[in-house]
Length: 302
Image 1 (cartoon, rainbow, N blue to C red):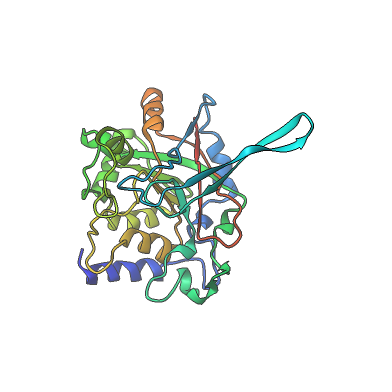
Image 2 (image 1 turned 45 degrees about the vertical axis):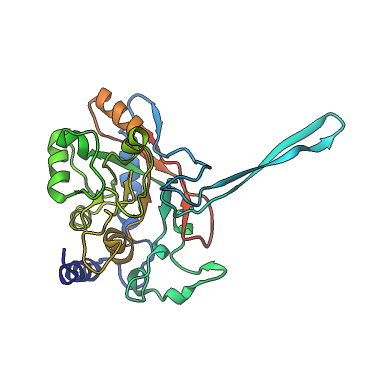
């Protein structure tokens, strides 16, 4: 995609926003109480599956700044016969290894945040607008797993490859599902499985992801949230002059929050066994009033 093509797509998506100049919720407006209530009907067996990767604490090629888990030893005494073991976590929320959600304030493009909000609202004290606080009550709706490697007949997409609009339409046909208004769309490219079987690599340089034109399809279908087992963006970028085109189009143009670096291996197995790829999905970010994102452990309920 040339830079001219990218900017034309960006303007089309941004100018097509139906919410008005004061909106801050973006694509979450597509997920109403009615859609949440309907999603409850996806639960048939009561089985729950985590969609998050385990938090790791070792330096790896894709995680040079890992989370630090500090134990407070000896245990803190609380009485003659009582003590509490204590610990502390320090994490780079937007790293390339841990599962997280990006708030609308995460992406500044052409010196603007989503819907023209001034990036000056972000200070050393945090984000004054568009923070992850928008999700304080959680995001609960119909989740749909679009398993691109399964549809292609491969184990995973190789780094540098990207899932296209044609891929997603093919997956819909194969899974006999159609993504629509208010859905939490989860696209599997097989990143976690490749990492598990081939070992970590420098994903900042090369990784599988989504083609930018996929965002236009998601806008047309009025989805509420997008997640991927990779960074959502392909690396190297497939758009000239823009390093993270999916992030820019989704978060900055549409206000469509992203879930990065999830893992879908367990979910893919359960969906295959059940013969269905839609389910109730519960996403509960931490209540961080001024943060640009949050660690997250989405749960699929089938």
